[in-house]
Length: 151
Image 1 (cartoon, rainbow, N blue to C red):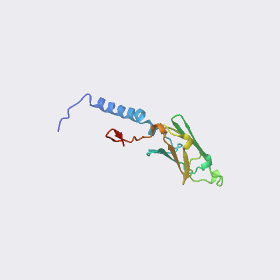
Image 2: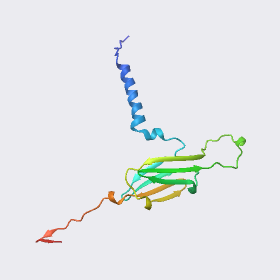
Image 3: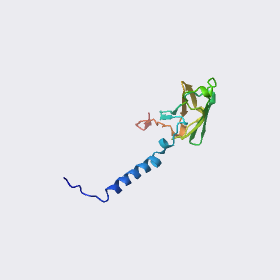
Image 4: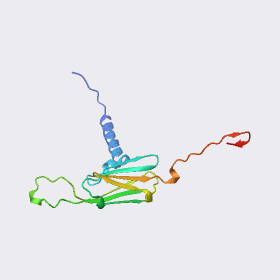
């Protein structure tokens, strides 16, 4: 039989680690905690000239989608409508969600909303938001000076 050394603060340390993990998940990475099944999933990436946002909107018609940018916040709203062909009492299982949705996300950089483009294909909305001119990198050409003259 072996003896196990008792450590009085061992349990307190594991409780502290659990609380730290809870704090990290709730406050430092809240976006995953706040997304619900009613909200569209969104991918966002940056190219040299624009910010591209892709939202998955299955079963939603393009005319039922409303997109707006206010300040640095992009809002995607819409509604998916239920099929009217099947009567409620005839359903065996009903898992598809219908109704209105809204998702607001912060844009990481200024964009030109008036030049934005929205395409909808196979249930995926693709927004291309050109970057504002003031944040696009500008190059400055270097001229050589030889014998007092700029070339």
